[in-house]
Length: 167
Image (cartoon, helix red, strand yellow):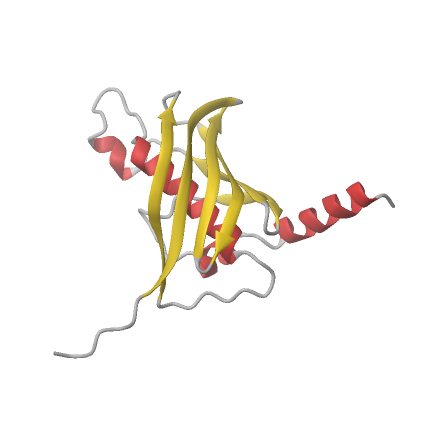
């Protein structure tokens, strides 16, 4: 077996274990802010591809925009950040601490090139550029029908959110 096929098999076996239960275990987000439906590719420590199926039932479409529903760009970036978090937290053996918050620290070069509308399948890509001491930088982009809808470089960090005592 070649090295390339070994890599493919390792990636495939990880993806088969990356179901919605694992997404819910790794991300603190819940409806209506959980914006990743499925992971379809995962290369540990390198890159991830996930899917968001955009439906007319999304609550933001009520006001953005009546008669011409468009997914807000900030929510596309949020979906990309959640995908990046899955790359970070999806390492084999990683256990998320429920008090850890994974937050944006920077967004650079954000560009929105195509509208995302009900019925679209938004393919979410994140590639790890570097990570050090609880901070990570990613190149992220979202695609619809093989066209880039949005792209950016983002930085994220894990912040320890210690429970507050009773006052």
